[in-house]
Length: 174
Image (cartoon, rainbow, N blue to C red; front, top):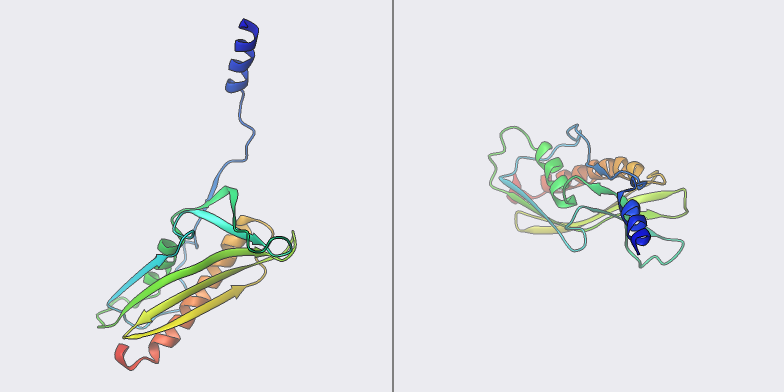
């Protein structure tokens, strides 16, 4: 019995060989895309994208299964990361009367093969009494979470440019 307890204690004290957890965001640089002046920007995410898990799908297998990378996380929930990028894209003096509300519906890396993937951002934006859906896919997202995070930054940039172009067409936001 004493030997079993000693072995158990040694097993619990052994160093962990798990890979260290990594955290990602959409980068330190502000997006090159810009938004028209806005009074306020809010972003929320539908479940399960309201946490910090980095989600993926295996399109060659069970494509309806949503999984999360084991050792990789977002530094903040995707809604907050995207809101920060939107705020960085605003002009310095945003004294406009129009507000932007965004709901993220999808923020996922989709693997076509074990070596290739794309990231998808799907959202609904509302501003000035109008609403529109946006869906952006960015290829060349690599085979891991780090490559996916870089692709998400590119996809967010494209999404912000599309949202900015749309808002510019709204008479109520000019």
